[in-house]
Amino acid sequence: MKDRFPRRLRVAFSRPLAPTAAQVENDVSDEVAFVAYGEDCILSGRTVLDADRLSDMLNANDEYALVGVTVERLDDGTALQVDEVVVPRDELCLVHATGPRGNADRRRHTLPKYVAMKVGPYEVQGFLHGLPGADPIASIRRRKPMIPLTDVRISFVVEGEHREDHVDSVILNRERIEWIAVVEPDRAAVPVRTDPLEARRPETS
Image 1 (cartoon, rainbow, N blue to C red):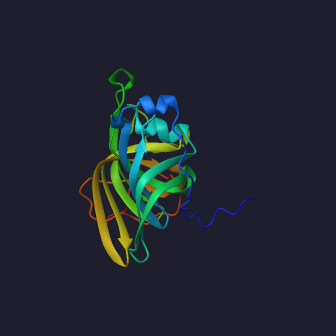
Image 2: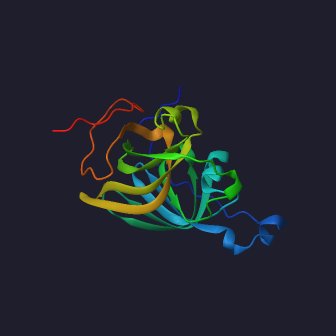
Image 3: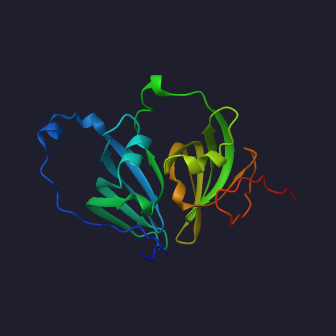
């Protein structure tokens, strides 16, 4: 069996591919800014959105090609400029990107739950959306691997210094969740949990 620990984000270089006729016809507006949070670095670049929604594209493909990429290492803050990289899905923790929310006719009524979780080296808080009456955390096991979260705060460390990113939405990799808990939206701290995907309200002091 393949050793999957530690699962580090590999920067895989590839030769540019000649565009197909269909790709040539695509408008440049199909390109979206794409921020990929990996185990040991953050990649910022652009990719082509080939589905109605970002979550659909991420779930439909096992890897993603980015162009015009800046790679920032978490351990020392070093930044590297790369023309093109290919990022495997299973080495991503979170993805933030611009782009459409998809066809409104496909949206279902959901109820949000504010959750805190540990995803790789990132502490994440935001709203997880589930069907009315369903436990949103328990339902994660039955969903596709890339799951949206809204009104998100991402906390992490770069070169020994704490940093926070606040974004409207992210797509998180369910397979990288170390623990998750329902919390109050105004909580300043989150509990350290080691049980994956276990819904438990944190103890208060």
